[in-house]
Each structure stands twice: as structure tokens, then as C-alpha cells.
Length: 272
Image 1: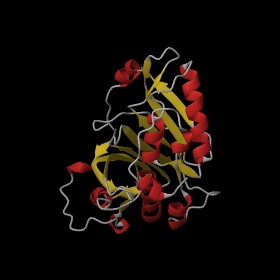
Image 2 (image 1 turned 90 degrees about the horizontal axis):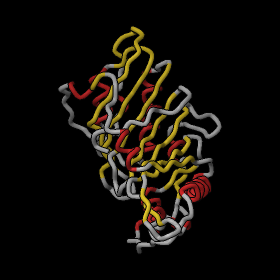
Image 3 (image 1 turned 45 degrees about the horizontal axis):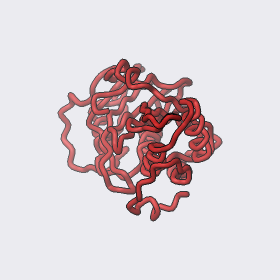
Image 4 (image 1 turned 180 degrees about the horizontal axis):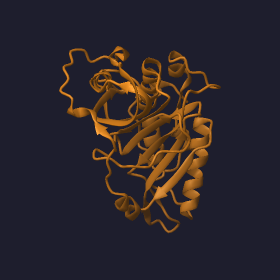
């Protein structure tokens, strides 16, 4: 189901397994506006979702907990709708499962059906999550630039090549903010950009990223827009864009788009 009027309704809390609660959204509309076609994606990647409040019952009725981590391939035609995912995960709370493997297989089956592509699921014990700790993005911080900004609406014109010198850089900012198009809630994130190619002006790149401050778009779509804008305006040979969003409703979303194969290292940042 994708009816946004249903999503907006104040939900009743369901605590027994109900897969019909899970809704999805098509990637196609936003991608077509960027000139992206399903059979010729300009990137590879994944959306990593971490659900910190996930709980269920074992066969004896004892509560079990774990961080549920979902990997949604960028090649999928649909993405989970985050509010419905929270309700769907909540429906496990009073449901008994014989084994953790049964929980994982159920999650994978339902998510795969929703996104029309294979989804991968991990259930991490609290001890494992604690051992992961809090990490940092590498490279240079863009936040040191004392820029002046008057307009806070998406502006790819801020992106400029500084010189024809070929560089390999990793840059990041913790100042990123966009807006959920459905609820109007702010989505804050840390964004990392890695590229090989002509040197990109750092102050202009920071202005560009800050220009999303009032931009309404889902987090996965925002990262794809950033990727396409940098690719079109600065023409790097290789490009990677990763965003790690602040946790909302017990779930954080971490989109990753890259020219390169492989998945990103899972790094939990300070606001997650």
C-alpha cells in the first residue's frame, strides 16, 4: 500500500505480528526527475536501516531485544515507508517466535515483498552494538569554512570546480538538514563525500549541502540528488556519497551511493 492518506492517520498500536502494516514507496518518480532510469543506474549502493527498539517474545514468553539492521539495495524499485515500518516492527512485540532465525527469516520475507528486491536482515545483540561504539567520518571537515548564506533552498549552482588539478578527497559535514516531505519533520544528518577528479571548491560544496535545509525529500532521494548534482556539475571520475541520518522513532536511515562496488563500513556516528 502507498496511500499517503492512510499513512497520515493516527495509528492504533498493534502488538501481534501484522505484515499488512508495512507499506512501501516507489523510487521511480524522484529518479525520473533526476534523469535516472531503472535499467541504467549511475551508481551502486545500499540503504542501511537500524531499528533500535525492536523486540519480540521467545517461545516461553520471555522478551527478546536486538538492533534490527536492514540492507535495502539501491537497485530495488521500492523503499519501506518509515512510519509504517515502525508500526510493522511494533507488531512483533507480543508475538512468540521459536528461534531468532525465525524472526530474521520473517523480516527478510516481508521486506523483500515490500521493496520488490532481496532484503538482508541482521539481529544484533546489545553487547555487539556496544562493542561497535561511536565512530567518525574520515577526511576533512567542511564545517570549518565561515560561509555566508542567505537562501536555504536546494541550489546545485553552488557547486564549482576550483581547479583542473586532479585530487582524491574525502570530505564531510555535520551541518546537513532536509525535511521529510510527508510530515514536515526535520531530518538532520552527517554527509560524507569521496571523489577522484578535478578539485571541488570546498566552500561552495558546503553552501550546496546547507541549501537543502528547507528541501523536502526522503533521505534516500536526497543522497541520490547530491550524487547526480556533483556528477553533473563537477564531473568527477569516481564518486561516493554517504549520509547517516539522526535517529527518528527509534530508526536511523543511512543511504550510500557510489561508483564503486561493495558496501560501506557500518559506522555509528555521534548523533545516532
